[in-house]
Amino acid sequence: MGTFLIEGATQKPSAGQTIFGAGYDSVLLKTGGAAQRTEDFIEVESDDVTIRDVRFHQASGNAQYAVTVESANNVRINGCWFTGAANFGVFVWKGCSDVDVSGNFFEDGAMGVATGGDRAGNTNGAINRVRISKNFFKNTQLEAVDVNWDTHDCEIDGNIVDANIA
Image (tube, rainbow, N blue to C red):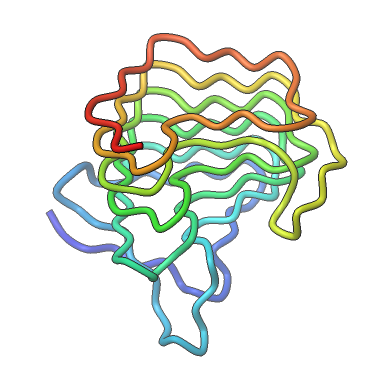
């Protein structure tokens, strides 16, 4: 049990890095005040990154996304808890392939998982082989899963949506 901090300015894992959480009773927060705040908790822009058993808690207005993935391959986000996302728990942006978002719990956020484009609204840059499976979505305000433009070979399987508000 505890609270673990990511240094707010450098929250980008290196290629091959695994981020292990301590489970549900621990919360991942960012350091830094409002002037240092970035929109994301973790920005994955490297290949072969795994995020496992981490709880992301986003108070209203604290972060738009818990995890973003852009221009990265072989990324795994498994067994995590996402609570209170102001926008999406996980957003897979352009230039990605082989991304697995499985076995996670999303609760009380605006949306769960999305693919397509990037932060600036660009629609170019394919996303290939995304797997969104065996996740549990509870009390999402808009969409649990949102698959957008230029996403190819996306597998959505075995997810449960409970009390979607929209």
